[in-house]
Image (cartoon, rainbow, N blue to C red; front, side):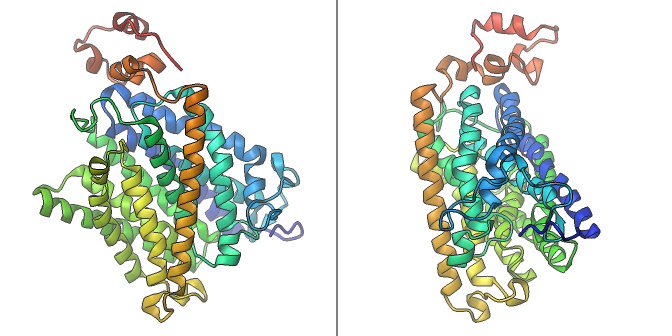
Length: 436
């Protein structure tokens, strides 16, 4: 609740300022993580899909997204009002809890940004950039904003009526991005050469750097959600570190047993899987619970990324296998490992709380996943019909870096020679017309 007469706590404000910067850094980190995982011909396009999400979501959030997500409820727990559209009425003296409301709004904006950017990994190598520019703001308003209100907004039905717990974004961030990624990759269809051509990551050091930046930023993501410099933030911070470690180890254990080789890509993916799973539960479980949550995610997600080959959906960079599956694991395991010393009341199955909390978590997961998938599928189908969602076949074959951005990440990766050449001469040589 915003209290105009209250005063912000300087320590809490300082911490949340730092946490907000950390979470914003996660999106460039994600860009590097994704950029290293694609082939050389689509590196810049992958980076751009993340970076442009920062600009697009920011405009939408300031125009009305924040007000709809965190404004007073106007529709039975489904959506907030537009009293703060354009950030109206939120001056520097307005306070949310113990921090300035403008800072709280900015912190929440960084969550919305990375959630939209996450979806791009499911459709790498084959989506029109122009269509992405339309998709992101529409998706943010129709999917992210309502779910954020359900989970965190005043009067949101998941928080106030259902009683499901989500400390830092398993439902609005991980499950919406994963379910939406699945919907979009089904609309687009598989990449050229899916299950036939080798589509290995082109730059594993870049992947590791991106994963490291994500891990660094995740401390702001999770510990910052305490909205204060306090013991709960410290516990969430430690739980985040612990789950990332066991996620990494769990994934490597599966790789060693299954394939005979622990890989750098596996280490990066395992850490991210553990961090995904601990996101909703870092403020609800003990340290032992966090270790178990991370381990479960590392093991299960290492198998889940292979489901796309059996079920024939081309989730390019494993958004479904890591973020959807990891988000489900972390959100459900609150119902198993939650302790009242962290939650202030609700307990999980292992703490004597029975199955009630697990049931609430399951209901929240099911509704959010179905809603995000259904609405995103409809958005994707509509965009595909109106402006076209998939890149032309020759553009996809040549690579989106050249055909969309008239640039290449590595000159030698395109020409095979050291002679300098302009992007326009490369395009002319390829005889491919740039597209949006």
